Image (tube, rainbow, N blue to C red; front, top):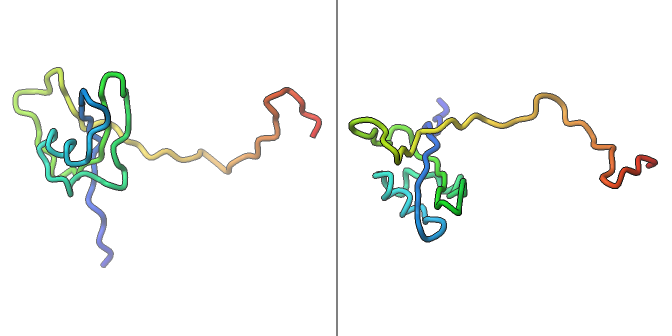
Length: 100
């Protein structure tokens, strides 16, 4: 039997000092560092406001008590991104010259 990887959820963390480490993101979300995906890493969402995204094992996320509140961290939608059909060659040129 093939073992499936654990389901993950997209969560956000905030910081006032630049991108957090995985350990800082895990601490903020109340999970262990190994529950945050090192492969996905810390992705900037709005660095000026200190908002970053991480993927966290779904079964380890602690649900907020008493509603989401203003500092809601997710989970957020994270659909797979893929082309809708075969990739088409780009035959146009930015300078407007289509004489190739």
